[in-house]
Image: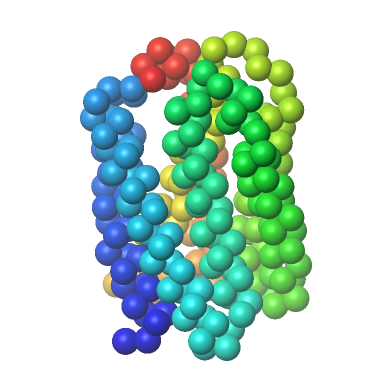
Length: 224
């Protein structure tokens, strides 16, 4: 088995744990014991997923395709940023200066700069999927900066960061499941047009859920 195929297999296997633990945490009472434990399992699963995803980067490099290696590396950094934000928005909810410091701003800046560069690569290579997901990174990074520069208004300031990280992880988890997991059974899903439609559809669902959650921040904050 070649490096890329090994990465896909391992990524998919651990992805099952990520998908299950995500929904256990999502459906559990917010702030409850089940929610917290499932959330930890989910983030640990994502760390494993990102580790195995480096095999995708290596595999593409070995195949002589540095463009897609860069694309996968960008996706790893996108999920890594969301995971970092999901975790530390809770751990540092009483320390806004600490959460919104150099690490936060560095990650936000990276997503914007890397996203713009990847968009250019997508244009050159004629890859709409690259362009679309690069814009997701740019938008997420820009929103991080917007929240970093906004005044801290109340004790619930951290919740927006937590929900944003969870939203991006939702998109990444379900996009991967549909294209890697379901794509094993239905290879047609991995073709350029269906693949792009999956990414766009999952992103729209994620953004819609995030908008719905924004309407009930008080209930979520009390539960956390």
